[in-house]
Structure formats: structure tokens, C-alpha cells
Image (cartoon, rainbow over all chains, first blue to last red; front, side):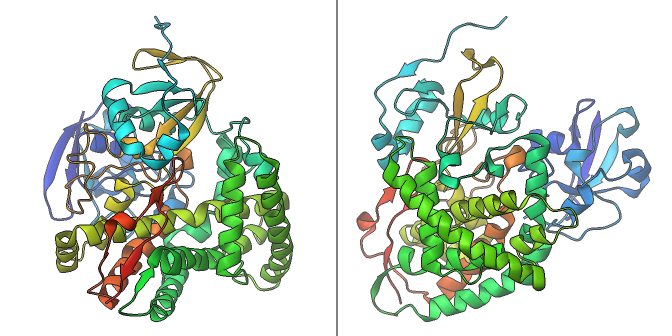
Length: 106
Length: 394
């Protein structure tokens, strides 16, 4: 399944992800700069902050419980489309999803 | 099918060796025996980055609740550091608001800047001074006292309590004298906390104590007290050792300092310092079910040790890992751990030591030198850093 990451400077990177894999995990596995995911998806570190492309906002769904508290901690600006990418799992509806990356995670 | 081979057993590596010079040992283990039962420590060492990360990210199998450590005795309580699952999460979240970036930005960072000015002001120019003792330790104690909600504690008290708890929690020989010292520290902390609880009840603030005490749905007072203590025990030596390590790195690699000054990459320098010599070098996890790592059977009931120090030097991930190199392109270190116990102080450390102290220090003393790098002594197996840092300020 394809995910396209668009960095803050506009650079696009497309990666392959497995069904059920989190977007954070796919980014880290493929060495995508701009996602750190230091806590491994435990919703502790807020270093996998991303902006879901508006066209995909419905498909990725709502923030999980506790996610917004952590997003408050994100280093970059939090927008309505902000998510922790560790909380979005790949499924058929997300084939080709577009994810924008923030300026910084630390 | 599970291979029934147990990991090899080593009876040559001593705790003294690991305390004085662990890195050459870890380099050998990564190459020859990345899963190794070390008799002197009574733990199975994991020295590869991939294995350390796997253990931390798999708390269902690798529990933090290891009853066979002296920690409970030292703290006279079971702290969040050694709990799992929802119980751990509830206690962690109770304290979390005080440690989060929003609070740091609004409260702790401005306060820290003020302390940096004060503590740098009192350092004498032109003399050789021990920066570890005069700066790294006391400023770590000062900001922590405020963050936790006990600003009335002196730097010396904070340092004594912290060391007493660390020595007690690491008292695997169960020596009574060390527990007598930790008991004394506990009595002092209990007395101070009793007063501080009344104060934050009357005048709430953004501190960890206040946030926990004034929560709509507070955790038990015994746990509030226990978790303030774990933060005292675990919140001074890491930022202290990180700061001293980074200063040492810069003073022995002056061209890196020059380039960091030019580019302003102080945050990157912080990450590299904590990678290079991880302040917390190793962590224990109790194995809840038989599991296999690199073809070796790790039986239920065993205790594994993830060696972050070694993960951070793993040749699979890092070129010239033994060198302090601020400008390495990737730095996926594990110094703050991973998984549910990911360091609660990570944001604070990054936004104080990393974002404020380093630049301020080298701006104030641009010609600082380390007259004799050999005079700096490094110690520690579980926790590691320089124990002195004689620099000439200029």
C-alpha cells in the first residue's frame, strides 16, 4: 500500500506500507525524515506528528483518546488535520494516502 | 519450533569492568555475543539496537515489574517506574501535564533561563573550576525542584536525596547502611512534601505535585509521594551527566563546537551527547513468557537488560559510533528508551539543556578550555557520565 509523505519544504517521498501497519512505523522503516516515533507508538513522545491531507481526513478518522493531549506537546503548530501518525493504521481505504510533515518534531 | 539453546553464560565480565570501561566490552559483545548471560550482574545482556528496541516496545512480554530489585526497599514504595499497563499509565498521566512542552514553554523554560544566568554569573572567569560540581549538578537540581513543586528544597538537599535513592535502588548487595541513608532521605522528603502538599492545595501552580494533588480524580497520596520521589531519584543525574558529557565532547572536538556555533545546531549537539554516552546505560525487564531472541531461548522469569549504551553504538546504525559527531545525518539513539516507559523528562531535557544551556554557556565563556582531558574520570554501569570536569573558563 502506498503512502506519500510531503515534507515541510515540499519534498515528496512515496513508501510501501503493509496493511495494519501504522503510518509512523512505515515512515521510520523507510527512513522518511521528519517522523521520529521515538516511543515506538505508545503515545508518549509526540515525535510522529503529521498533518493528514484534507482530502484524506475522513478516511483516517478522528483522533484517538489521549491523542489530543499529546498533540498539545507537539513541537510544530497543531492544526485541525494534526494526528499522531502512530495512531493511524493502514487499511484499504487509505491506499495512496497523502501525509504532510511538520517543520520539526523536537 | 523454539530452539532450546540458552544464551551463552559469561563469568569473566565484572561489574567493576563495566563501571570503568564498558564500551570496549559492548563492542566485543555486539560482534561476538549479542545475547549473553552475564553472571556478575545476574542478567541477560542485549547489546544490539534492534533487540533493545524490541524489548522496550513489547511490554506484554517484557515487564517493568521486577520484584527482585532493591528499588521498593529504597523508595519504601512501588513507583510507576516498576509498574505496567493501565496502572502505570494512570500514574504517569497524573504527572504528565507538568512535563509537557506547553508547560515547559510557558513556565519552566523562562525560569530555567533565569537560573542559567544566575548560575553562570557566579562562575569565576580565568580559573580552573569543576563545572560538573559547580554547574551541571546544581542547576539540574534547581529546575527539578521547581518542576516537581518543592522549590523550598535546596540544591544540596535535592542532590543528597537523589543520590541516596539511587544508591538504595542499586543496592543489590542489600547492605543495611545504604538503606539507612535512603530511609533518612525518605523521612526528610516526607516532611517537606507534607508541607508542600498543603501549599499547592492552597495555591495551585503548574508543578507536578500541584497537578497531581489538585486533579479532579487524584491518584492515592502514597503514589503521589512515591512518584515525586522517583522523579527526584531519576531527574538530576541524567541532565547533569548529559550536560557534562556534551561540554566534554565540544572541548575535545573544538571544530565541532565552532561549526555548532556557526549553524546553531545546539539541539542536534544535545542528541549526539546523549547518544555518545547515554546517561542511563541499561534497563531491566522481567520476561513473562518463554521467548526467542537471535535463536536463543530466554526463559520466563529471566531478567533481560537492554544496554542502551551499546544500542547507541551499534555499527548497524552508526558510523564511527565512538566519536562525538554533532553532524551525523541520522541519530536514532535509544537514550530516552521506547514504549510506555519512554522518558517522561525527555521534553524538558531537550528544551532546557539542549535549547537553552549549551548556547548560553559557550556564549558566556567562548574561550573555555579543558586543560587536561585525561583528568576527567568517567564512571558508571547503570548510569554513566563524567564525575568531574575541570575546565578553564575564559
